Image (cartoon, rainbow, N blue to C red; front, side, top):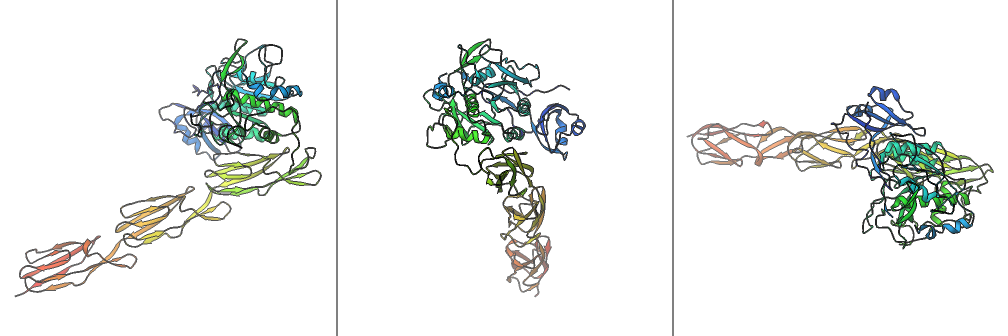
Length: 630
């Protein structure tokens, strides 16, 4: 089977050429997709779909699969499959462009003895080239054409140098020169590669117990698999640093932060220039967390050389390097605590407090260990014996939120609320996301929310499905212009009920008879039709009846001489027993128009004779005898 390789670029951010939820093109013979399973990868199901597993991951039940395009929908129907998305194309971008070490207080940190020693950093990028100014501790390659993690593009080497170029008396010097840098080649020579290759790189970093992952890449396309693995890394105690993106506008008012930087579990890094202004290319948005030097940065490059480059790709490794210094300075602090220190020690720029350009401000390297701030938990020497969530299950529907509190029990018998400090992640972000213990349901399905703190984990199952759907009525009868509000009640998985009339999808079989919007049914004309309300895979049908049961007239016999006129009123008996004057709406027929004629319900006798007039409406007819005798 020929493998269709979707590519990822390597320079600073990833730009997806198509989204994970895009329609699978029928004209393609094969598709490269990422499949998320419920509990474990179902190899049999993939084989039955004529698929080939290109890669599986140790940390989550996800597989990169190549299969015929017409088998994708069939595989989606498998009950073990949670989600399928296309293997997107991702780009990393940086422009040509070193002054940042002084601006971020790094020399003061070195003088205090903090150089990143003992901290393991995975650079998931184009690899790292052999260089006299770099010492690579190890690595792996996940591209299709080589097993070597040697850089053949230059981007990864530049990033690695910003983090850890050695203090050896020549060349340049990285933020954390004694950190252990690992080259994880997930992007190809062109600076591009598949999302599955990046996932494999992150998976490797988790498995090999990295302390920090640097992702100088990004995409404007969301991916459930991408978020799940980044969340998994953070929940495992790994700090994930990601470039905010190079999609900034001149005004800086647009929300252009890339994924994975946009995920709560990642630290989104924006770029500043040597004047500490926002670099014009730097993406902006509410998820920007920190700023770092990113314009005209000198670092290691191919052929044992050096290059000057720009981009949030350069800013991210500055933060990864600082976190290595922070970790060495605060060896007992976990990932959540280090992230807090990063925020608290930053230099505020722009608008006071956190803002969409600089986040909390410009990173500042530590001069000493961070002071112990007042905590809700006991000192770090106290061991967490258990972690308990306020609930173990949540039944909610799309758009609903649920706040969960987290309590840590310690070996000394004390307890503390750790809701805000814990690392919260979701097994299926497409269904539910979580931030600070607040779970937000995004769509129907199931997910597991995990909270990690002090080496312990608590889990909360989320069931966003419904047992049943019921309408407040199954029949509406009336006349045109009548309205009726219908309540649509969904029963959640836990048995609780909620009116979801406004959230449901409503349809009408015949809009000429009745229309419906957010549960409000309006009769438009006489007749009969059906409206339906659908929600969570369930549908309820409601009969709308404005039909006519019979017609009656004010008289059934008219007699008189020629010239006699008489008004006839026609009444319709509706299906609900209501009587309505329909005189202006009926159609009249006269058997002998020489004897009489009818207009607007007025019968006029023209000459002597005998005939019949018949008003008709909605399939009903009444006969009226007309006589004129000499």
